[in-house]
Image 1: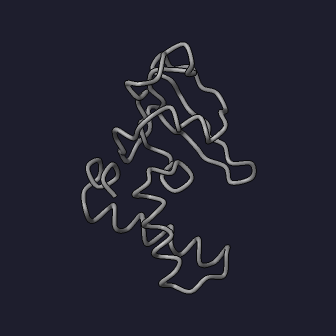
Image 2: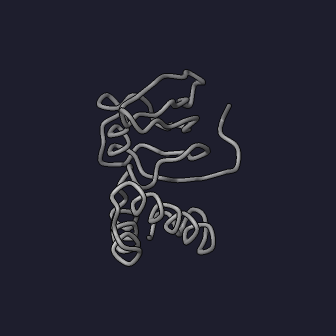
Image 3: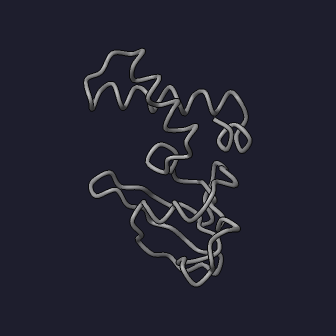
Length: 117
């Protein structure tokens, strides 16, 4: 849970993992122990599907060329499940819809109650 734990602290990180486990349990009809284990594993791996939420700031990873990414930083404004996508604002204020997998180019750096909007 390193990135999430570092960004939001233990209480909020735990709450996020529990909420994710509840979603996994409901959607996949798994037992509570299995759902919690899967949620922890996904969060620890930095899986954007497990982490991405409104109010977060994601910054371009150092090993990624700026020309290969839509921005140097993204603030998540909203997220959709089908298809997995997000509405994000870049560091210049431009808002656009992006596929969720674009976050593989970034790392989570902040999670505030309010987004950049």
